[in-house]
Amino acid sequence: MDNFVVSARKYRPNTFDTVVGQSHITTTLKNAIKNNHLAQSFLFCGPRGVGKTTNARILAKTINCLNITAETEACDKCESCVAFNENASFNIHELDAASNNSVDDIRNLVEQVRYPPQGNSKYKIYIIDEVHMLSNSAFNAFLKTLEEPPKYAIFILATTEKHKIIPTILSRCQIFDFNRIQIQDIAEHLSKIAQKEGIAYEPQALHLIAQKADGGLRDALSMFDLIVTFSSNNSVTYENVIENLHILDYDYYFRLTDELYAQNVANALIIFDEILKKGFDSHNFIVGLSEHLRNLMVCKDEITLKLLEVAEEVKLKYKNQAKATSLSFLMSALSVSSNCDINFKSSKNQRLHVELALMKIGYLNSVINVNAVQSGQETTTESKKKVATN
Image: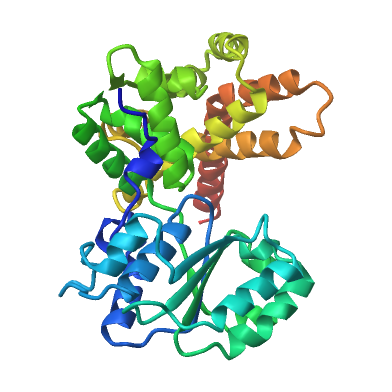
């Protein structure tokens, strides 16, 4: 029986073209290789799980490849590529700064830099992950080598916390800022993996995983594996995702908004009680309600519709509910929910605090109508005075 390999490892990109959602980085690196404009020290910055270490490895493999393809990719067949793929390369070294952060560790690295690359490889490459974990003394010990390395030495530093790196190190590096990966890109990548693995899936479920991953592809793949393991029929369904990841179903917010807009406050409070009984946090609930109201406002205009990052099926629900609700109600409701979120932690009775916000939203239409009537009466009175004056 074959050992299970997690998707984050099994489908880890090994060429620039297979990297997800970082085209601005991969295009620049490929052009640098093609035009022989390689810097001697790179700094890859960004959130976790967006491809910093992966791109560092791809870059290291490609610049040492003996037969780079016309598309500026590693050939995966030469001596250098085979050695790298088998983790047996003597010219590409990886160092985890989280566990090797002392001056002695850096001095050992500096000593290694003195020796030129072996075999036919052109460069000796050092990938230092979580570089912000180095101590100040270690940074200072590294400075001179980073400033004046041998021609054959290239350093690729990766970090999630750029602000912790001292300015003298930053000034010596070519800095690449990685973006959070877009929800649509993650969902499409998950769908490709599901198809390769023969896993049935619902697009809505993959979108939900992508949203929960918050821009990190590795987190999305870990959640994807979890859902597949949980299912008994090798599938990824919306119900399984919300159950396993403890996500509040969209339908609750759609139902709640309908009840509040119809001024059925009692029904809205019953729905909120049902949500609490399922173990959901009331603060997360009010944050989710604010996001739901924001999404409805986005649907009011075709221009802003592209800001709605949900599956097509859910997008249709948002469009229909947005048509059925007034913009004045949505704006006022969003203001109430936002204030509830801001003052939540300082409230002594947090459940009552949220319930009071729901009551306010539930009676918004009455307030809006009263204001409209009063405004109309004032306008009529002013018109009569003008007529009488004339």
